[in-house]
Amino acid sequence: MLGKGGAEILKAIETEQSISKAAEKLDMSYRYVWNYLQKIQKAIEAPVVITFKGGKSGGGGAKLTELGQSLIEEYQRVEGRMSEVLADQECWEVLGLKLSARNQLKGKIVSIEKDGVTAKVKVEIKAPAVITSVITKEAVEDLGIKVGDEVNAVVKSTEVMISK
Image (tube, rainbow, N blue to C red; front, side, top):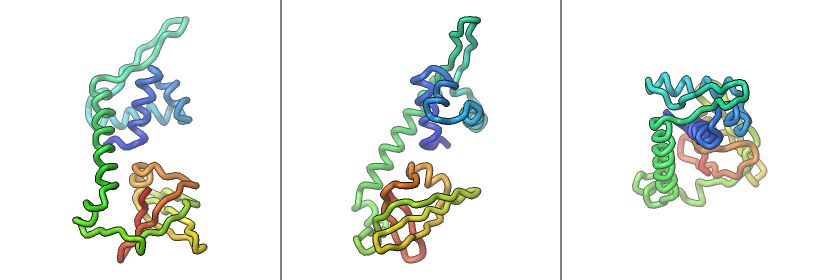
């Protein structure tokens, strides 16, 4: 439910104590951040942020509810565990996903095209060649990849995956 982008929004609100300052810090529009918060709150049917208005001299702002804070903590816990699992070569081998030098190609992302649920990620490898991987938009966001990042294109028998 809460991906990297959502966690960053909540962390910025916690730090800045303001939705508009958080949006500015993240280089996002206020409307986008506001709508994202509404989407989260609708999904969990509870507020994650409390806003308050200021007077003529300002003083308004926002703060996370206990639920908002716990969402950040849970995201960080899950992200930490996922990082451990992804870094554990033995775990992948147990699952039958042995990653050898034969099926990993290092390269640089040259484009990302998001469309609906999927995203097309083009990776330029040293050969020179460009590999295209079709993955979910959520995977792009979860990996935090962007054009110019160095990644590994992982080739399975029927697909090309992206790892970082």
